[in-house]
Image (tube, rainbow, N blue to C red; front, side, top):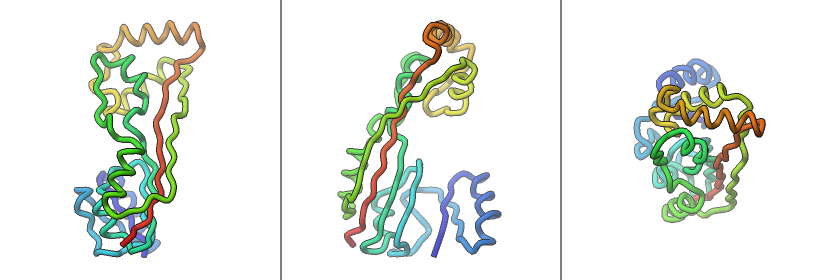
Length: 180
């Protein structure tokens, strides 16, 4: 019994076209708190970089089943966002391993493994920073070259002197077991 959930319509269509011929069920999901599965449906649930509702995970996971999630934490690229966006306020400042662990434990999931990591990300080209900021709108709200021109010029000077601009990503992984 293998299933995939997707919220974004282009990805949903892609998943249906690629996975349904392999007999993998594809479900469109609108709300994390309303997953379209029966109670105790799965032995394992994998989640990568996606939001989730801990109580729904517990509901559809069989007793003894595993939930494995790898998340992007709320401090992801905070330095770069602050350097580019005046008065930057992160959207999810409390999204971290500690708070996610607590939510899972509060929903009858036992933590088997967890780890948090802050890898460095280096940019060697100002154009790469512009591209990055344009595509990751939630970390760089209202970014435009015009609005951020002075900050980009300052970064460019740093890049020329140091050879790169460095930011810090935020990742964490948790493996939990449903206690039933």
